[in-house]
Image (cartoon, rainbow, N blue to C red; front, side, top):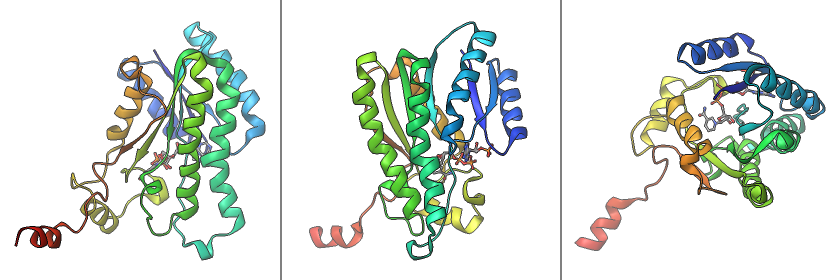
Length: 235
Ligand SMILES: NC(=O)c1ccc[n+]([C@@H]2O[C@H](COP(=O)([O-])OP(=O)(O)OC[C@H]3O[C@@H](n4cnc5c(N)ncnc54)[C@H](OP(=O)(O)O)[C@@H]3O)[C@@H](O)[C@H]2O)c1
């Protein structure tokens, strides 16, 4: 078992992740990839194919995780066409064509996990285009499941709430407290909270889970105004 991870602007972080995986007994390597550059996908596929053979002596990938992303916090009336195109390219067009490019390398019976967002389920202020394209990726997940099912390839989406990562410049204390207060479990996610679910969906433990979008958010924005409701019902 091993992982080919990718980086765009942060090769040092990728190298640290590779080192950490190896120190924990896994096998990993990192390749550069710009998910918005569809013209580079054929060469990327060739590089993946070469590394699979050279490092693991195999010709097929067991799974694909479409995870690359970045945030933009702006109200709809200030978003430019370039900003919208950038988000579209990374969050929807990129995963579409990268999956298409890697499909010949994906093993029959393999698994795809698309990382979307809980912002597709609530209207969080300032993330409209990001959420819209993540919503498109959720829908695309179902079509992937339908079209790739003949080869036994499953496709699911993981829809995280706030995670303590570098996205959008990271969380400041005030924002984190606000998000935690909207989460039933009372905190934001650590990366592993989401990573474990992605790993489970890739594994044979999840062989019968297909075409699903699974929210991994600790119970984000799930309550209604229950106190008045209770008093109305019981007094
Ligand atoms: N953090 C949250 O609260 C949250 C919530 C819901 C969903 N998500 C989703 O979770 C996924 C992972 O984000 P994260 O939270 O881990 O953020 P992060 O720490 O900022 O990591 C984002 C990753 O995406 C890569 N990336 C960005 N643009 C890319 C491009 N054009 N081509 C290739 N790679 C690119 C970055 O690579 P480099 O660093 O090498 O440039 C980095 O590895 C994203 O899809 C994000 O939308 C995050």
